[in-house]
Length: 90
Image (cartoon, rainbow, N blue to C red; front, side, top):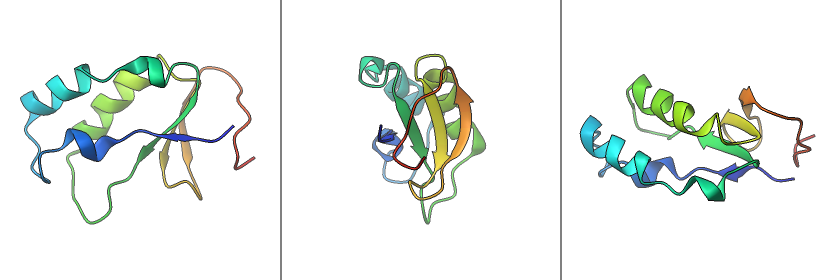
């Protein structure tokens, strides 16, 4: 099963991160698309984001997804695993 990429950059306002706006957009994400699936939270190249941006996304996704990874598709790092899922990288 292939990792589903979470579109983190869609929650950011042109590279500027405002917590209240980010929190609203994150809370509006339809989690049914990610339920019980292997999901990858991407590292955003060329942009320094506060750690809380990633932490809030992890807190939102981890209870719902089967496996939550971080990084890039070629070498994801597993952050949370609720059940064993065969991924394309295995």
